[in-house]
Length: 296
Image 1 (tube, rainbow, N blue to C red):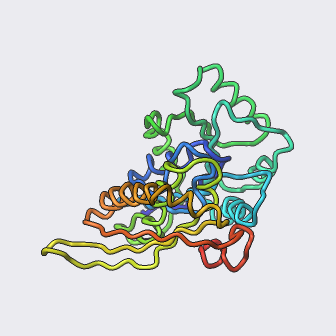
Image 2 (cartoon, rainbow, N blue to C red):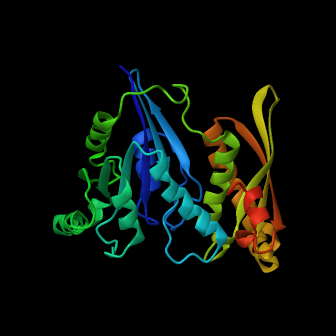
């Protein structure tokens, strides 16, 4: 027999959803920074064995007070997971606040698939705080299983994995067994550059940017593989462009160097990277821009 299923991961921003998926899949599928709202798209990580296939889905953190159409679309990615979930995992932390009127609670109670509550970051909290969080949720949602983990330290990840494996329904392999994600290399390259923007720049700048790969050509130089990549960094206001560039172009040079190093590690090839900064005013509220950037 063969077992397979879609295991969808949802939760509020910065609870460790991407770190958890990376720990389960064993590959760095989603960018991870200390900043909330890092994940913007629904990203699938595929883990296959001889008799099973798990399709994990990492989603953007659910935001209550949306200020942009982009954030509304990001919420839709998370709430759409009910449609194809074979298992739903809700990730929280002991310090996260939850409200009985929370729309997430109503959503979770409407999910028919098995539901796992995953309390992450237990390495940062006392056992009493962890248990208190489980008891709070137990009164609000009829979860099938409860797990306490540290995704960063991979604590209790094997236990969680084994239980997910047991809950998989019988089914075919939905993707080729050697495929790791539904996203392309170009997508992950743009995510790497965006990750470096999140690390290098402060305040609103990272959230006002979008990265588009305009050229991705594989070739060679001196008989060694070389990938030539051209990327455009879009900002939403003209005043943000000089901030991205930095004094004398110092910051964009740093961004290019740090991005190239990580892209080379990801592709396992030498990379020639060129970055360009463009202005697309208020792109986070513009339907055409959002569609162009792959949000619709």
